Amino acid sequence: MRSIGALGKATNTKVETIRYYERIGLLAPPQRTDGNYRTYDDEALARLSFIRRSRDLGFSLDQVRALLSLTDQGTQDCKTVDRIARDHMAEIERKIADLIALRHELSTMIESCGGGNISECRIIEALSPFDN
Image (tube, rainbow, N blue to C red; front, side, top):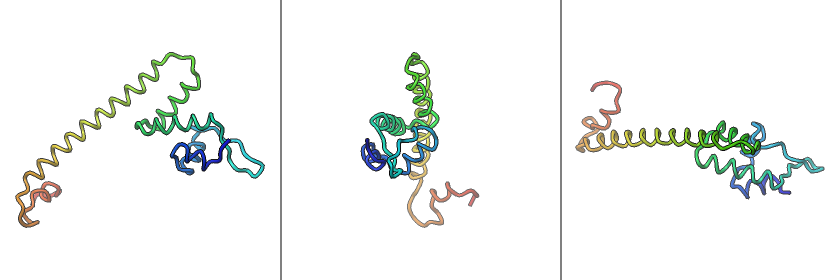
């Protein structure tokens, strides 16, 4: 058994985040000591590690909840897990495409800058909502 601080340290998770995961049901309410301190077993450590790894990979809390639910069932095939992962990958690909477009637009703005005065700055002009 470990304290909330020890659990946080073992998983690199802030104590408040652990409490939040308990409040929203990702982590089960922990056992309590006679002094009403939270105590966590190895199952809680494994579950929180799963949550952290999922979040590090960018899965949303809803996706993590779904993955945990499937993990808890354990007997289904992994088609649903595969779908969740593929949907997440598609979202990452969309974000990458958006970032590439953003980089191109910003590069174009930077290349158009000829130096000089702010009043003639092409970057400021491109960012301005009004025609100057």
